[in-house]
Image 1 (cartoon, rainbow, N blue to C red):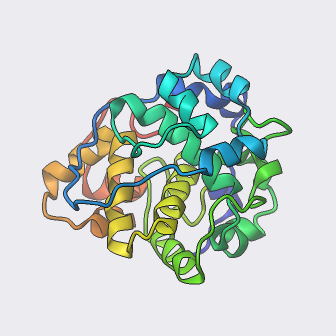
Image 2 (cartoon, rainbow, N blue to C red):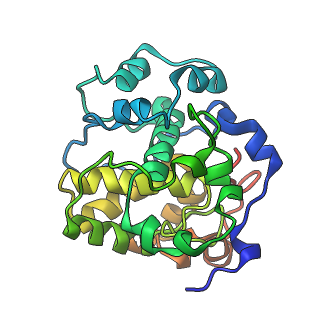
Image 3 (spheres, rainbow, N blue to C red):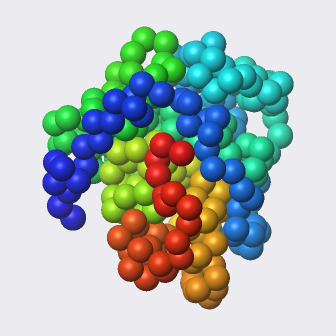
Length: 261
C-alpha cells in the first residue's frame, strides 16, 4: 500500500484550532450494528487514568473543549469506574476522544512499523495536530510513547492484521494509517480489546459497532444494501473507505462522512 503525501497529510487549521470541539457536535445516533456477536464485556481497567497520569489527557482541557464531562466520565478518567464500557449514543463523543488518546499514545507495531513510522509530516496530521488537550503538547508529542497496555506479540500481530483491513468512510486510509481522529480511535479500540483477549473475528465485530456509531448514516446504507456482509467484509475498502462507499453503496447522507463533524 502506497500512501502519497497529498493523500495522507491533513494540515487543517480548522481541525487543529477546534481540537476536541468535535466531541460536542459529533453526529449522534445509535449503532446500526447490533451486538450480534455476543462480544465479551470490555472494561477500561487503568488505561484512562494512565493516559491522564502521562499527560496525554489533561482533564481540565478536555472538559473545557467538550463543554463538560458527566460524573461517569469523570469517574472513568480518575479510574474509579468499574463497569463495562458502554457503547451508545450518549457515550459516542467520550469514546471517540478517549480511544483517540489511547490510539495515539500506546506503543504499538502499527505506529512503529506501519506507514506512520516513515511519514515525515506526522505533526500536521489531523490525529496529531488536532489533539489539543494534552498537558504538554499536541498529539505528535505523545505519539507511540507510552506503554499504557501490555499486549503480547500475538495480540500485536492480530491488531496489525485487523488495522490493515479496516477502513472508515471519511477517507481512503486504513486504520493502519491513523491520520485522523476516527482512525486513531479505532486503533485504540482494537488495542484495548486485544489486550483483553478478543479474537480476530471479535475485533472486527467490535470495530464495526464503533464505526457504525461514529458514521451512522454510512453504515445504515451498508446494512440496507448489503445486510449479509460479515463485519470484516463491511469494514473493507470495498464498502468502508470513502471511495469504496461512494462507488458501491452510494447511499447519500447529508454532509457526507467527515472527521470534523
